Image 1 (cartoon, one colour):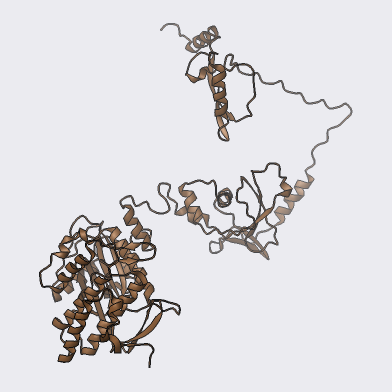
Image 2 (image 1 turned 45 degrees about the vertical axis):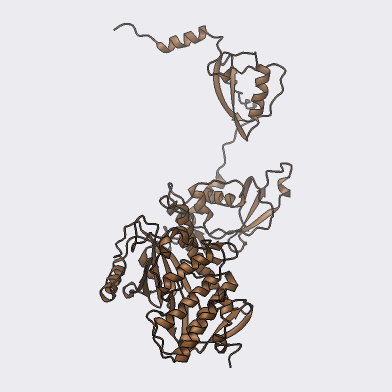
Length: 599
């Protein structure tokens, strides 16, 4: 082995030989007021390792100064020609003790008395009982248990609440923003830079705390002149909030698998994320009591207690019952439309338009997942008894649905048994008057009012109240009440926007068999609207009223005379001339069914 070489000594030696080379060093410091110097400043630091130069010194210096004034703190980089370590300042020796003076030994008598008093104090319980972990008690004294979390976190929360202009956007911030903290302020100035906590007096009532806040916008304001801001603070269970904290997620799930229309639909239903079926059903019935009661092209209907739940699959990439699944944005509009029509059921004294004709929507939920075994069982029992025309509901885990929870409106017109001509007339007048009220209130058009979307039930009421453009009338029911359902194809003007379904995207709707009353009505609507489905065409409501008269004449059997049939045929002819349900409700056929007041 040869003689060892001290490489570090060689490096130092080489540096000493090249002592004229400047050394580049980054210095982090607070911004200082720039000093004006007449000498040019070298900016060799602009290029790493470059030698200092004075060619463009003054020009670059002005740029560097403007840069240093940005922000509260800045990074300054300087070039030093001689960067030698600073010598430590000489220590000052303590003054010598004057002669003749004797230094007294420290007196700890007061401290001894203090600790003697502490030792004499006996706690009732040496440690808190598990059943009373919140306090230690002795006589009238209550010593609260120290919080598990640092009070600094609570101070941060308070300052975050007071200073709304600048606050962290982290997950912790979002959770603490939603904690049970409420503030009642008596000061209008919310722009504060620093916060000093003042301990409340023992006589303070409740949880009221007093904070002395010093605005940073006026440094000349003395601390004594700063107004005191009183804030009522409710108890904050920070530990409970932090248990819910996830460092990798927000308070509300991001739903990366869902697009914006779906999230808008979820929000319109008052949810933050989809529910499962049993969670939604359990609010209305015992899950074991669920029974399927009907079906349609786009979904299934189940009875849940006194309510009916209509389930519509959405946003799937496969066909259901031979049809493309509805999109979230389509169902979003139907949700808003359903809530809007609910307003017509509010019989207020100053209401301009009101009627009980449209089914009451009790709730709407977005669900996700496969059909629950209870729903599968209910579906298969229906299939065994009636023979379902729909596909078996074998849905994947990610399948989403909209579940409309509706009032039970009875049986649809197709299966309901009308007893006499009086019930048939009541059916027609209730549907006509209901459409007239919805036209006046929201420019409403149903556009799919076939006999499966009209429900009937029997009750003991002899009349029903309607308000049309401020005028109240009572309609004879003959013991039958009508409910209109299914607003998938409907059009409405909510006052903020027009909701409609563009039926040009469904050309097969207009290719039904010739001579079929329902298919012919779709084609008549297409001719009236000229494929401009956004527009208001109240005539479409009249087309469905004509369809209903045809159904009563050709499809329904009830006790009627030849005179009754002639009246129905005459009504159909006159309706060909009407442009709205409002005109149709004034037809002589309904004159003795409408009363201004109950006799």
